[in-house]
Amino acid sequence: MTRLVTAETERFRRRMPSAEKAAAFDPIHHHLTHWLDQMLHLVDVVLEDEGVTTETRQRVVRGILYGSPNPADAEMRAAQRDQLADILEARPPSSVVLRDATEQWLGGEQR
Image: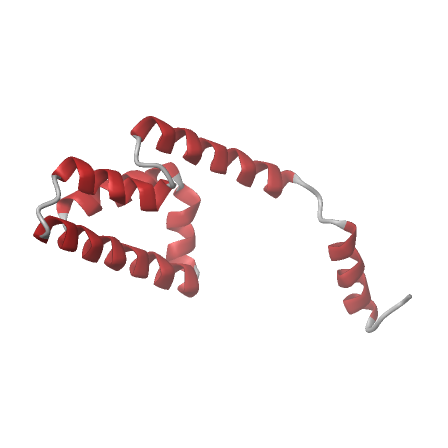
């Protein structure tokens, strides 16, 4: 991987420590993380070969990782994603999930 991509992906992973844990224990997450690293590397190499400046390449990589090329906006978006993950994690399961789990536990539909 290029140094630019390595630095940005390391920064991204530091912001999301649970993603690093998931990559270690979940083979699908590990595969997707590896695929993302390879794609970012290829994008960066192509942009560099086309003569795109380092600043612009960095903005493109940040845009892919965070959905925003601006570092402040990228940090804000990552913080929003973290807050949403915390909210969803703390939220009790919906009644549909509970109903489906109960039906499965009881061995069939109970309507």
